[in-house]
Amino acid sequence: MSRNILEMRGIGKLYSGVRVLGGVDVTVGEGEIVGLIGENGAGKSTLMKILSGGTQPDEGTIHLDGKQIEITSPIVASHLRIAMVQQELSLIPSLTVQDNIVLGREYRTGLLHRLDFKRNRDYSQEALKTVDLDLPLDIMVGRLSVANQQMLEIARNLVREPRVLILDEPTTALTLVEAEALLGQMEILKSRGTSIIFISHKLEEIMRVSDRMVIMRDGAKVGEVRKNEVTREDLVKMMVGDKEFFSRETSRRTVAKDHAAVLTAKHLSRANRFDDISFELRKGEVLGFFGLKGAGRSELFTAIFGADRIDSGELTLKGQPVRFRSPEEAIRAGLGLVTEDRKFSGIFPNMDIKNNIAMSNMKSVSGRLGTIKKDKLTSISTAYVRKLGVKTTSNE
Image (spheres, rainbow, N blue to C red):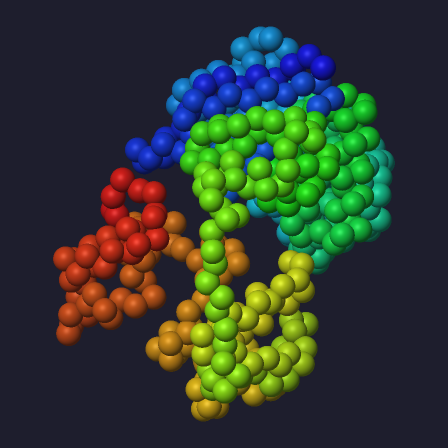
């Protein structure tokens, strides 16, 4: 068993009075891959943001090589050779591949400290080699596919030779071939002594590459197991905390073939977004669309919802032709859209919870003159907070 180079002891964190982490202990050995698993909201990403300097703990200590340390910023973490590839990419779309790789680590030369073009270029090419990525160094990152951006994010961290590498959902946007390449790269890094914390909802990947797995639920560590000690079903039960999870009877929902179609699309197209899409959604039916990021799923429904243009094709709602010119029209017609990127297009982070909840239907809480009825706003938001189990101390 390898010696522990990293220890997180009793880590706790509160946001607006809500405890999101409570006394979490995690250790990582030298050259060890530790899988960190749990449902959304379990506290995994928050714990890793503390380790990478993105946020500060309210309680607990962190030890590296047996010495207590304070990671007050990502810069401090970088100096300690702790790197994190976050779920939300931190690349700058308006800069080139090379600029993103060397950002903050530019090689300079001469008395005027001018950029050393050759050394920066060599360094960037070396970064791309770490993940076998073949990209022009001068192309703007915003023009890359989401998968290539993900690999670039990983590459610019690997080239810095971190001692501890945190990978937060790194394979979400990757093809099977790209994901396989990344998992193989993790094994190579492990053999070189790099310690890795791997967060993923893909339990097959976690179980395949992890030496040890830490399970979190509701901000607490609820279990720790070694490879080959548990089954996938065991892990799921620990994550959800429901021992009857696999034995419960599930209702078998069927959709009658004679049910009328509620929403029908025929040959919908939008230049450079999606092409010739047709489908039919019937009453009471759950219709799934899947594919990698950038495949056009979100773009299709953003256009159907009226937030983007449809170039050609037909759309009917309850048998009537429709073409929504705005999300407001779609909402009035009875459609709702939960966006892919909640942070940038799904909420108003500078507004309180109750106004965010009511935002899509402000008329329901407004008087004749458009003034907000505060009592009704509070009543509606409180009802949805309870219904959906939103963790908050208040609606304010």
